[in-house]
Image: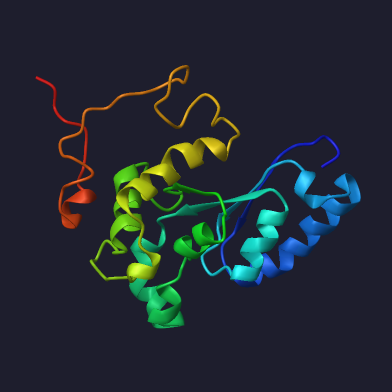
Length: 199
């Protein structure tokens, strides 16, 4: 904190978040006075976070990074905590409604692969790999919203949004030719998107 370094902490369930946020708040008050003027902090996963804790992280200049690991264990999670808990794990739509900057990823290679289409399909359809409908309309994103979490918000999570993350003059860019149109293919095809074979 005294060196002004940004922090990144895995906080998966709200029980952990409740234990760790007071420590971050205390340190940031002691070192910076105003926790909101402290360096960027990133919280990973936040799968069962409450609205109150989302607001606490926002007050500390925080970003939440969500990953698609639940697509592999949706049925186990539902059996343990119930479908109602699963339907809001993580509560991505609520995070966005409260004004939280949310980035998305895969948690590769600890849980998932690097394949971004698994995560994008999860965010846009709310389905697990076994086609369990995890989320209702209140926690599913539009495809353009999901893409923003992966691009511009991903760049913001590393403070690089001024030169990457969106297609604008003066920014660096990569280009990929896909085998299908991300914005128009049926939901069941999203996760199978890949680079087109160039002949």
